[in-house]
Amino acid sequence: MMYPYVKYSDGTEVTFSSIYIDNDKECIDVHFERPTKNGFDSVRIKLPTYEVTVWEGKYNAEEIEFFKQVVKNNSDLFYKYAKEGGFKFA
Image 1 (spheres, rainbow, N blue to C red):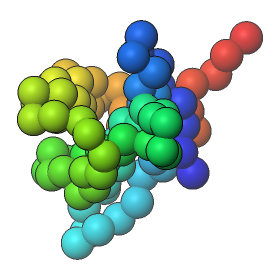
Image 2: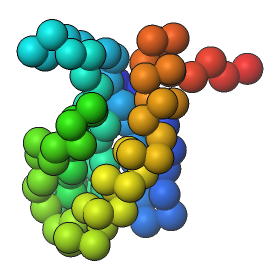
Image 3: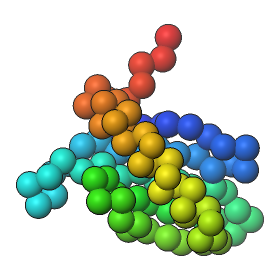
Image 4: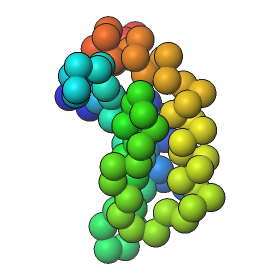
């Protein structure tokens, strides 16, 4: 299951997965995606390792570093809300 997190002004949407177990560790995938004329630019970063597991399209290295920082700065929130089944909106 993927949950919405934020949408940036360039159209990049950030979503995060439910918690899953990989090598006996709780993991979450954080996905960044922006529409283009021909599809999407996509990046996926895995918690807790901060490994980039998907990089497709035209995101540049500076944007990838920004995304890694977003994931690092918000990792506690990703785990919290993944455990709660996403955000609860009124």
